Length: 266
View: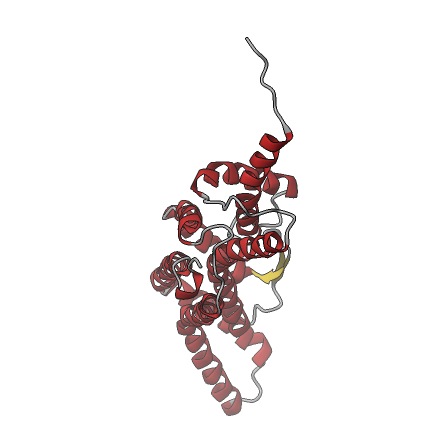
């Protein structure tokens, strides 16, 4: 049995073959839901990126004349990172919209001060924001959103080839417009509960004007919190329907992103 002899050309070819998918997958892992959480160690993220890159490397069509250490190679590397980050960020914005919806309801209920350290995001967030994030994560996993998003990432290597993808203004504009639509959807999820709490606060204001001797802070705070939780329980079906629609829309937007008019090949 003859030993296998490796030369520098073979090693260079293998490294280049894995380098470009790793950049796109690495950017995806840095921005995608769940994979980008702060609780996941960096070493684990690197292992996940390398494993996914090895699986998706056969899908990547790499030009033979594309060198890693050339000016064109540096530009291609930046594009690969941008593509991966954009695909993951489109869906992550949906979770940020859920956190925004929870914060809007918390402020209306008077629970804006009830904040906890969110280990997933590495920042303080209200209790309702964390609850909405948990609902969104469970919905995302229940519909196999992580597998759908990985399929979109794998498909991007065909629609946006390595070194030949053209990141035009339409591509970046679609990400920005989707971000605006996402936060609009988050506001719509929180709007019924917020309107109900505004009505309660207006009623408390009328009562206070009619009976100034009442302790508004002692009565109004309790009534607002109780009515806020009642509104959330009554409207739970609508909230879950809004969350499911938001997650589905985010996955659809990610799929449309890789086929955007400004995201084609040269």
